[in-house]
Image (cartoon, rainbow, N blue to C red; front, side, top):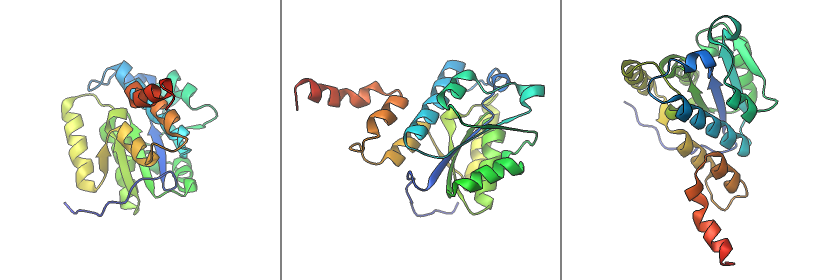
Length: 205
């Protein structure tokens, strides 16, 4: 496995791509509970919005097979167009590819259901196109442990960077002194992250 030098994610070089977080697919997920997965995806979306990242959202066969995007995610991203497509690999849809290219970002953060298809295929395609691809594993989900492990291995072999959603967002935040910090941690639903600030405020420091 080749090792690349570390280049941080920033609010200027990253974009978020959310693939197929649809009601029908959610019902089959077995590696996370429905409540935990919804929490993680919504937290990722809200944090990315707080950091002003470009966000691309897509579904597949919304009206014929897998149903709409789950409503909590739709509510978290008002005004964001959801591109419905027929292709298995989101990157194979010209509209999705154009939306990603229009962001102008070279570091793409993917999350999707299922992990080994809907997140993995476009992430591996991005790497093949010379971009840096990251997958937020805990904002994705799949239908068996075999699928999860095989998908993770395949992405690693292809050069995709795997992480959890909160670490990716905190990496982009970079500095807890930034004005966006409270909104980011609030989006991530990490109340302990603001505890020290609350104590300091209570004592007037």
